[in-house]
Length: 416
Ligand code: GLV
Ligand code: MN
Ligand code: MN
Image 1 (tube, rainbow, N blue to C red):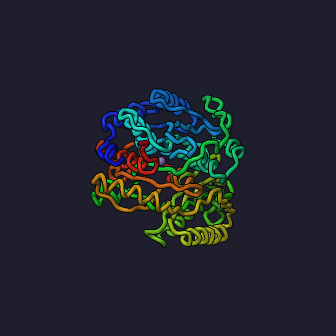
Image 2: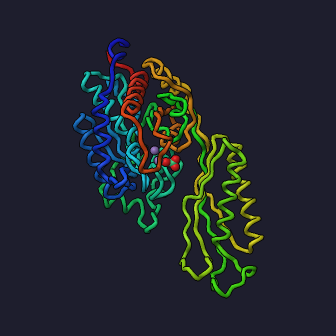
Image 3: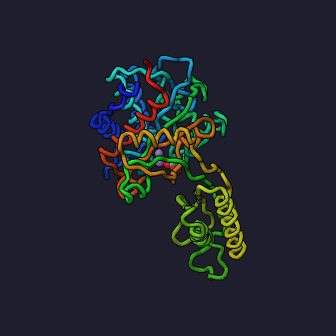
């Protein structure tokens, strides 16, 4: 069996062209992509993806949360397939590779197996998970979280975007409210290829990251209630300024995360002044907090440190601050058997590699709680991601896709 597939290579040009073809759906002037989940551009890329999967002979099903499952039959259909894939939605100012690489590389793996006439022993199934990014609807990775039972389908369907549109309404609007129940497709394991979204592989001149762990995530919604009053006539000591309070909270998040450097990060990525006006002292602000660490103890420290700092700031400024934890995802430790399979594939193919922790969240992290999962990383330029300038080389994308393919072949086996 080994000699049949050991020299098998994906078609690097075909993969590169697919990445650039789909980048047209939501293309931005700066060369990035704006493809918010379940929006018009997401429908365009989904339609493209469905057509491409069907042309490759795959059977495509859509679940109640819009995730797409494209099955390639194996010799033994009594076994659950090996899953591979990622997501096709992007950040508002996202790039061409985050999620797209893993999904289209999975398609490229199938196209390569088709061309070579290779049947796997166990079936394989490509997935495009709905709303990995979490920028339109929270939480991020909501479809894979529901898949593993962290949320009910109805809970996720009722989540609203900033305009008050629910996930259910958005799915109906683009026609991706599928007829399959969430969880209908079982897997024997899941492998996700992704750009690193950080600087390590590039700095160390390594082609492949063998991802063995992922950071845990704490997401909060915050609300500051001070008192609106006249910007000209209210003396400084009498103010209860919500924005000045937020300024201190921003620095407290930074200081709390820095206390644990390099084991933690903390960000306030959204802040909105309610009824802003140049000559009114801000009275109400809504904000979000995103804190992460791969160490569960550090996550507890971040939570306690943040709450203590906010209690002190709010008491001193006589301003009310509410901080609601809306999502807590524990750190991920990927399945050793699959991590080893990724490492063996990278070694066999002769790529330089190292073990690495994922700074970003991924659907594979959710899936790993219910099945063995692993990830393959490739470098991205200057470690930049969630930015229109996000970039990766054709050679690195192809290397990652080859490692993905050989990992999947090791797991699925080749029918003799
Ligand atoms: C998803 O992109 C995340 O890590 O927030
Ligand atoms: Mn991603
Ligand atoms: Mn992302």
